[in-house]
Length: 441
Image (cartoon, rainbow, N blue to C red; front, side, top):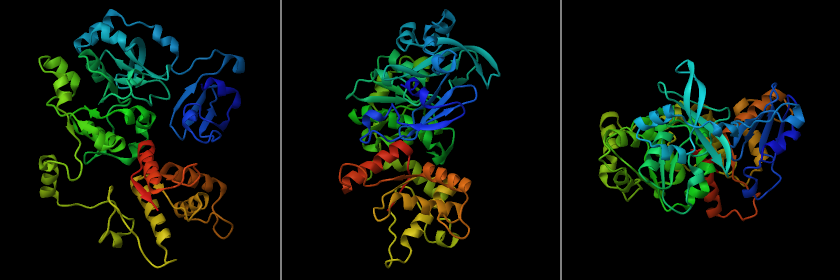
């Protein structure tokens, strides 16, 4: 799909085009959300700001005189696994039949942690039947790498049976374990557990790494329920929490077990049934429907640390009586023209700057373009329009990019009327797509 767009970008140029990945689902077919950037070596890097599809394509022969090879090159699949690779997988309880079913392949890759090139097992990622990414796991030592552009889909998404329960695990080896023991509809997250975790939660700076949830929204929404069987360490449980937040906790079940991951159970205690682990998964806690045991850890934290506070408003004097907590509703009232909207805008900018929060704004009394300029002014602390201390062109671009990274707008440009239900539905989509942590109105 991307190769067909290469003629639209020249050397050392950036241009915007209609994204071929999300075009079929878009109501407006002429929105140019994808950026094509030509690099000095002739490669074209693509990134969609709507569905987050991204990657790169090497120069096309009829355009730039050198062979075309998408990243990753589909020819890599012809590199069959050797007995050495199968032997390594066997130590992890994975048979040749399972490895072949997953279309694993061999490669030699440079691994930064190992500081050398070595033999590796390749995991191919597909989207709509096409190879779009590949990850690699060294068989000497333990390290991972992937092709430029990275994987932004669940591993195994091509094999999902729509409408049936789904099991989500943390890594490709756990995926192979699930296939090995006969589990159906298994998915693995493409990048493992988040690197940045605090207090058992994913930091907002990690939000963009969860684009794979948005890309899989159709199969996730069609599933009657989703079992989260991530690793049992802190990052793994933070991953489960973030997945549940985006998919919907009412749809999720959490698998608990006394091992690091499913593969450890499979290799260390094959007498245990992984199917039993999945079957015993409990519903995620929902307010008013949870057993008190669910809250034991929180009770212990309260006993040791007290209630704590939410995020700072950016005003120390205000923080003494009010802080902002995710999941809570805050109402700002006052007389007309008393500055309520300006205060809320400033509050959102403060949270975005200090804590990297993302927001979806629904404000029909303001045109989005005017609202954006106001946020740009607050961020840059300079005027947008003509007048004293007006922002320069480069400052304008910096401010716009920052707003683009932290805000989405729920507007009235769609075909359906903006009812309360439709606004809430778009807000839920914003959580899946961008990981928003606040709504402004």
